[in-house]
Image (tube, rainbow, N blue to C red; front, side, top):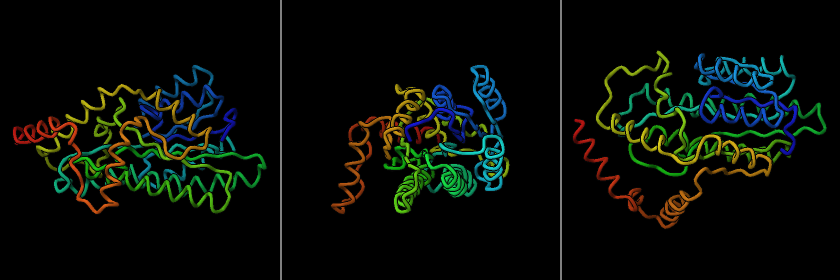
Length: 302
C-alpha cells in the first residue's frame, strides 16, 4: 500500500498506546479514521484531539471479543466512509503468572481480546476489503495484526499472553499466504513489539465483569505484573516510534515488523533449539540476575 491520502483506516484499541499513535500518523498522511476501544474516556479524548487537528473520525465502543460488535464496527465504517483500506487489529491485554495458576477467566479474557479480536477483525474486514477492491480498479489495502515478541519467544510467567500472541503470528502468516494465493490487492503484516511504554501493563483496569478475577492474585501473578510494568515503562522505543516503523513497513510491503530487532538473536536461538531437537534454552542465560530476582520475589511474595 503506497497511497494513504483520503483512504480509510480502522484501528482497534485506538484510544491509547500504539492505537492512538497509529491514528495520529494516519491523520498526518491524510487518512480518514475509525477508532474502536472499550474505554470511553480515552476514546473521547483521542477523538477530540484528532478532530481538533482537522481529522475525520468515527469513534465507537467495541469489545473485540464479540463478533457482533466487530460487525457493527464494520457496518458503521461503510455507512460513514463507504470503504476500508487499512485495518489495525491492535486491541490487546496482558496477564501473567505461572501458567497453571491462570484461571479459566484469565484465559477467556486474554484469548478473547488478543486472539479472537484478531480473528473477528480478519474474518469480517478481509471480506469487506475484497468487496471494496471489486469496485475500485486502483484499490490498495493492508491489514496489520499486533502480536508481540512474545509471539516468537516464550518467557516464563507469561504463558497465557505467549499463547495468544503465538496464535496471532500464525494467523497473520496464514492470512498473508491466503491473500497471495488469490492475488488480492491487500497486504498483510504482523507487528511484534517488545517492551514499549504503553498502557498494556495496566490493561486489567478495563477487564470486563464477565471475566473478572474471582480470587486474589497469586505470588507469581503479583511479581509478573510488577516486573512487566517496570520493563514496559523503562522501554526506550516509544509508541510513536513504533507507529512510524509500522507505516514504513506498510508502504514497503514488509510482513514482519519489529520494534527491537536486537531481540531476534533470542528468536534465532529458539529456532536452532527446535531444529536441533534441543530442550528449550534458559531465557535468562544473558541476564541470570533477572531470573534470580524473579525467583526471590516470588518466594518473598508468598
